[in-house]
Length: 356
Image 1 (tube, rainbow, N blue to C red):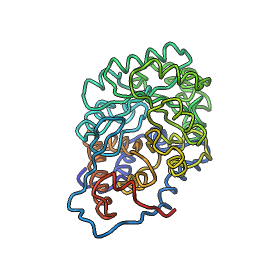
Image 2: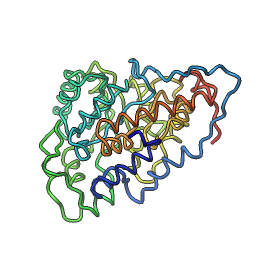
Image 3: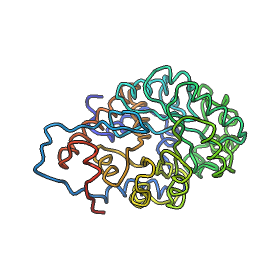
């Protein structure tokens, strides 16, 4: 891991050990993967205007996210089935996140029960899908709260899974030892289908396509935890969320895995931040691959970012040590980028100008 000097090195290392179908499941997007590529392209066309003649002898990366301290303006994005790539799965990720001082957003489709993950310690958020059984959804939210999770993150852009052609062509199926530990034993996710993805079939059975604002209000009344909506891109939806009392939004196109052709997350952030004017916290998800990317997101109005695929590459390459290396690299890169941009801390980063 000491030889990995950027996140791309970890991705290459993971590619040497993962089965091709698992690698495709993690890396792939929906359709022609236009939005998947556009997420990265949006960062590549965003340039920072650095300040000079400032004392940057010390550059601080610590922030407050959802009212709690974090060592970086970063949280681990909710990604399903960590045990696909490492035997310890989410437990290894949780230990690494705790050591790095960053929150870990645990997926509904985690391959380890939420109670075992919170027992590791650290800051844990729970990502919630609205299930076809609404009462069961609220029970799951209460279960996460009782387990010690510090926030609920409701994903709102998955009425069903987007058409992920890599998974369809691979007829992707979960191995018997990997299951959705928080909701069931896996069911159809373990049955190889004909010309389809077993994981897509399973989520279609489990998730409700009828999620509405009324259910968001219902969840808000049901929990004392901060409520985050993940998957918001339109200004109308962002304003509605702010009016409904949501604590934060994750500006996200699901890593290019839902509507192919959806706006890149960074472009949506640039539009939404001035419209919302700080009425709720904004997090950015999709395409973050370096500390400079984090700085770009901060300059465009994000309180922090979510990182998903790089964490999985680190986990696949070297388990907990690989995930720790992800955080080490992002910390070093962000601190360097802050100083070179003339910023002593994250607050100053949010005042940087960009050219896009």
